[in-house]
Length: 91
Ligand SMILES: [Zn+2]
Ligand SMILES: [Zn+2]
Image 1: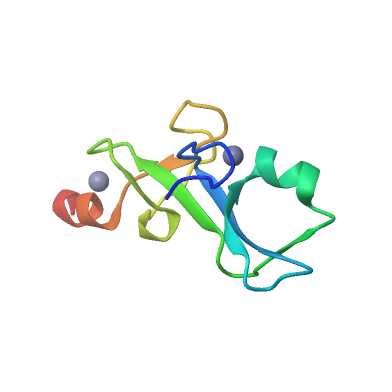
Image 2: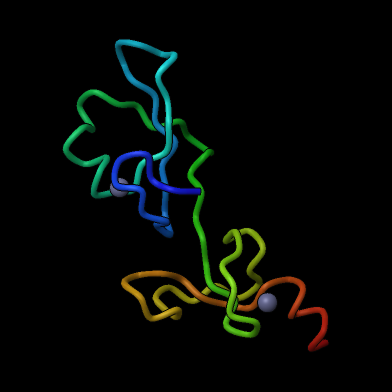
């Protein structure tokens, strides 16, 4: 998933819809969404948050991390933890 504004693979992308034209929707990172927030609605429940599995080093959905630690992945505020797959292997 990439931000529709800057093309960045951000760790947190909001699914937004245009207030005046509901057909226009996309995903935006926080910095692209902020200046447009008067014109865009965020669709609740469809925020995609990525976290880094510190065991195998890949980005996974935050829902797949068992022990989320904010900022653990180092880059900015990217959360890190252990994915369900690695957690099972370690058990
Ligand atoms: Zn962006
Ligand atoms: Zn893992």
